[in-house]
Amino acid sequence: MLTAWVKAGRPLMEEPYVAELFAEIIEDGRENGEFREDILPRQVGNVLRDIYLGALYRWFREADTEPNGSLEQELLRALELLLNGITAKV
Image (cartoon, rainbow, N blue to C red; front, side):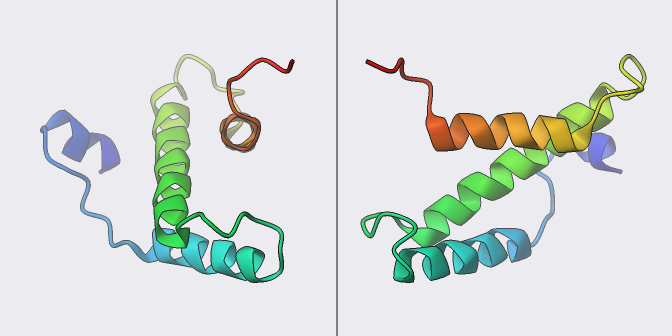
């Protein structure tokens, strides 16, 4: 069903439930000093949801060509990139 919507050129019809859940986790982390205070939990929640859906889509799309592909590894690589960025360490 996921690919049918994407191939049809329509947006995915997904409630923001996952983004809201991620936003709550980020807010808790902010309150505990684990995350910067200047971030917007809802924005981070949306970014995390986007990473999740993108990883899920890539994993599903590549299932035929890479049957041993791991959704977990795809998610971990994407999160590592988000958390550590793309800048070179100086």
